[in-house]
Image (cartoon, rainbow, N blue to C red; front, side):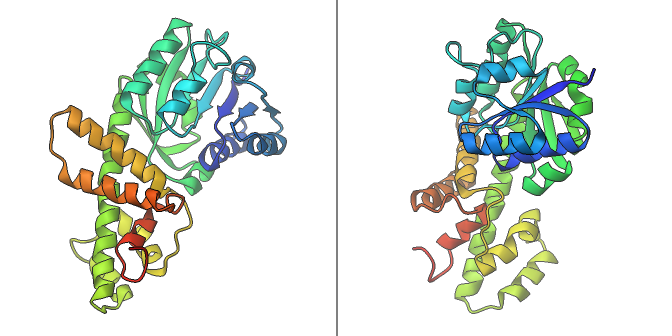
Length: 294
């Protein structure tokens, strides 16, 4: 019998992952979100149940994906009392895809083991279109046997599926990916902002960047958007602030001085404080271009 799959957290990433698995022939039995209308609409679309409780999600599925916002949300859905995914969870597998701290992944694994369930980190280094078409870069950590058991499901979501190691390590790698990406994003914003202040043609400048040591993946994804103030959200400034903080804290815990990480965190924190955290991370350019936000 094919596995029954459920999703907790059906924002743009979770919903598109569910759609992808449905398209691939998997059975999506239940969806749940704190924003109930989103879950209700997706349930109708997928022919799934709009689960009224977390416990009912677990009851309806063999493998449950969680795609929530932060540590607090992740801990809440695996609460030790009250409505929880851990209710009658023996034999279930939880695949946790949120970008959260490594220690929270370790704690969730501990709670799940205590009730006879298994967990796997499924850290994503891609965005909304890749979730929909199954081309996520997916980094997994946890028991290798758990990874092997659900690999055929994960392979439908990722063209670059990678097993990293024990629980917590995928979150560490994801934090480092986002650390470098966010530093690059803030740096590109400053370079283009200064070019604008100097009166340079920014299209020309981006072309020069692309052919020199200033080239980066961020230049491809965000450069034109920074120039044109087109900040439709694929990865929000608020998430960049959260993820920059995770990486900065890891550095502090390791006893390292990470001045670029600290400066980048402050930029995205400032963007969020100005009420612009809902913009794409390219919106950090609003802080550097003259005539935009001071």
